[in-house]
Length: 597
Image (tube, rainbow, N blue to C red):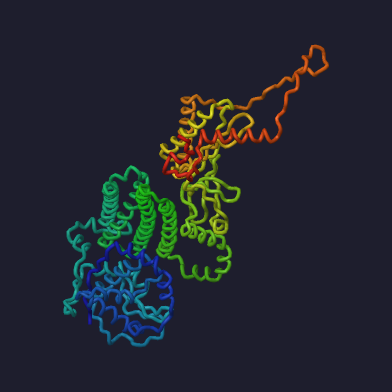
């Protein structure tokens, strides 16, 4: 008996996006499943079984069981077509074959052989071609490529013929969009001048123009939407990053539109075998490209967020994650595009397995550097912008990558250090210092009165207490030594500055205030000098004065006694007899000794 056919509509074009995700997660499992040999299923074990499976599946699809279309397509030989075109070509093949059968004759399954030894079985031969089943290498009986190539002429030969009456399920086939268009077109448009019908050429041109228009419109809408979402952070995001994302997204949408509408044109299978793979590959490339650029947009957005935080770990993490995601997108994208181009991924994986040892040895340094970058992220020995010293290398950290860390030196060159060295190297992070020390000596003239020196020292202590970036709980400013050219005052102070540039600026401000204080107090700074002493003319020379009469020289005990008495007098005048308390930086009056009132 004869079975009715159904029009075949293509599934949503967005399945390609889903397929991209699936292909990145389980590509090897799917390929391995396809390569596992198994027994020939009973549904395709003979010409009769294949005919029965095909007709039963098409009738079930007509009744609403859309999933049975896969069973019908499994009866067709599509091995010579590109993988990206097999789905659409299989549906087209199944629909056209069912239409031809419905307009030809009843199919008596009992007359078909259940066993056939020859590799070919010709069911019927017509002037325009033949319906042939061929046994594949795996033992399955399939409608052959010869049948598929003859179908366009076979359909043309029965174009004006009615469907065979009395078919199970009502007979015939539901008209497709292309059939409805053909019924309302003049004959000149239905004619085939070159490869396809004239109206199909016009429809292809309209489809291309529609895709281009949608591409441009979507680029504009997405750009406006992204800028609106970013809001006030838009100023911190590179506008070129958004523009670079709009282009592949528009191309992706354009190819999705083509993929959705192309089946409505009812193109021949040989044309579908060229156009559909091209669209699928372009869609895959655009999808990978758009995802790659989306990573840039997301990274720019999160970088604008990290700019508002005090921690520098996120500043270090964002570019690292950005690179990692790009590598993942490119790797999985290449696998998916290769599948669409029918590149044998399974053999490639096998080759990698055979050369795995060599690959592992070659990637040894890369793996070490990768673990080094992970170690840096976990231990955080430095952050972006820190001034670090590693061995004889010194500079500011400007970038942390998956393989290396880049340091900008103070003569503005960039040094690249492999991350593997950071695991065992001693990293001196000068940028992590909580306080930055200032130690210097201020030399004043020897003739400066003690009162001015005391006032000058106390004035400098007050400057330390007033400056915003100086450490208030520890500082030492005292007359420290008698220098060769002046009295040296120790100036030992700490700055609490976030970076070296701020430290230099605040040190500059503090030193200028010290100079102003010295000028106001009349304190003069000493500078290296030499005094030339000219001795008197030796005795006996002409013109030499007579030597003075010798004076009585006090004894040693008397000299010691006088020195001690003068020292006690100075102590009583200046400091008093009480024990001085320890220095307390919270009480300015206890930094210097308390004189006797």
